[in-house]
Length: 473
Image (cartoon, rainbow, N blue to C red; front, side, top):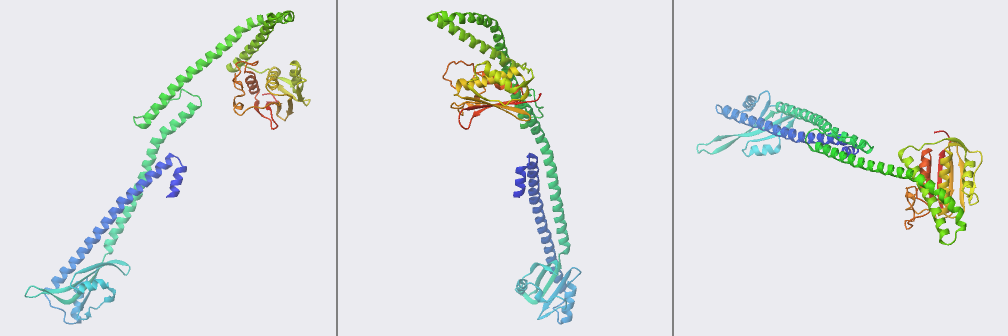
């Protein structure tokens, strides 16, 4: 039973339904068929017993109504023969003598003989020579003139065969087993039908839930009937419809926001270009301006450059969001490209570069420059020197590691390093960066089919690991 329970626990709902129905069928059949069998067996034996006792007493009464007590052994044997038939064997005992036959008094139950000696009619079911039988014992009595009953001392014992009744009982047992087997088979069949009716909507619900989780918001269930499963299907459809509406609204809002950012960024490029030309003039005149005029000129120039970088970053992000960002692949000498990136920004003296020569890869040079500029610039601005840059090449990919000697990244910062507009120090209302640099670097790495991972070096400081494929995608 425990094994069946463990199997049901490991199996699905179908197995549990089958076991439940089978157990219910077996228990019900056992109770009904078993109870019916016991009842019928008792009735059959009781009827056979009553009939045998009544038949014997009637035959004794009729026999001795026309004859007296046996005087000798011959008459004793004759009485026993008259009271016996094919199914019954009779022993007559009188005045220390018994009728002839293969049965002795020692073979009879002692308790039954004691009751017969007291003048009572007694019977007892026994197994005689391997067959069921009924031993009936009685003592012949006569009525005296004063109406008193007087025992004569003539004891009669009859062994009545119950083989016929046992066969009937065996047939009942066989019918009970057959009924039980049929009931269990019927219960299993009903369980299969019930499982099919119950599990089909459940399977459909599971499939629909998976499709909904995969993004198919048009998934709906077919509602059948008006039971609890139909209510569940209707609830699922209502939920899916509401979810589709909300997700649609969110997607429209997100698309509107992206379009707004892209449109604003593009619209700002023209005035920013004009402002950049003006700031070039201001940069030339700033050294000749004194006091607040010089400070204002330098501030306008710095903020214009920051705004220009922000607009360019927003345009780049909008390309990633719209799926229009594409690679312009070329065969690149990675060491030379990294060196050019550092030299162009005046970082060659501030970065310890370990760049083995001869590492070739098919990459987008502009996007590789953007990735390195953001990672090295982040290490220089937010970490502590010296910044180390190491290139390692494998058979199918190359690895670039940028590490600083600063305090490293806090555990609560690590999950958000590549989030857009995220700044570790939320107390700073604004900073030189836009909060988009690392996000853009991550997107460019993904566009190449590579990865960019942030962490902390074992000896302290932040460590960014960039892995890019060397071959053509």
